[in-house]
Image 1: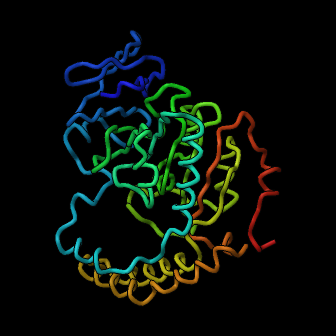
Image 2: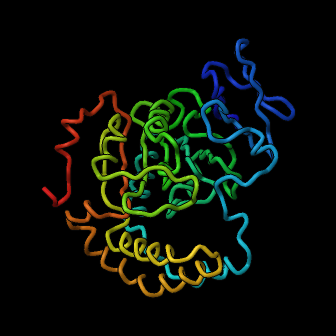
Image 3: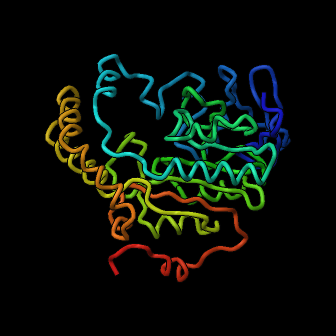
Length: 316
């Protein structure tokens, strides 16, 4: 099923998982935990530390991906509604990451967190035939080939050349623990790429927990050296989101909220056009909708005193 890697038990973190007919079982005699396989997708969840249970996936319950439930009207609205803001940095960042991983390894192994639905511009990485990509999520989706929780990744230390987490870390209960797991499974000098929101309202509820300022985001990746970091979605997008959610707060009826989204989109989408100019301004770091971080695994940990000096905003 996955010949290039060994699965590590996400519970004991000691035993390699052995493949059976319909499950994977831990080789650690003190653990011996069994994990089901459903539709050729292994379900490798540590129930003791996850908000999900194995049965959620074994029984085919809807978890985080509401896309599976969209009706034809919802799909029609998604086609006609203007986007509230483009991601202005993902393309150049994926191009750089692609070059870096190709230099690092002839057959790079790339772990994608929250990959049930492909992220913006990810095709730049996904289209490279040499890349061995492992698509993980806590929901069955078009791309998911491993169900696992980022808090307990079921992989051995130093397995991957890169880890990608695009618009995911706001949806995990403990992002610091997840990033520690990224660090653990990366090879020496391996790369991490993440995009995480700052000024965004609740989305994918109830699985929405955290936001980060620019310095907070850098502190999250304090065990990594900074290759490039900055704003990926600007203040214009942040304002458009705030305007939409202000209007949405007037009604709880689903049909009315759908029309509010259409109205808000058509009356605010132009705000994001300013971001192509504002993203180059230091003030955007104080009002961004989202940030990105591209870094490499380091043996050193940044101190909070060092992090304070890395402030890039205009609000001194």
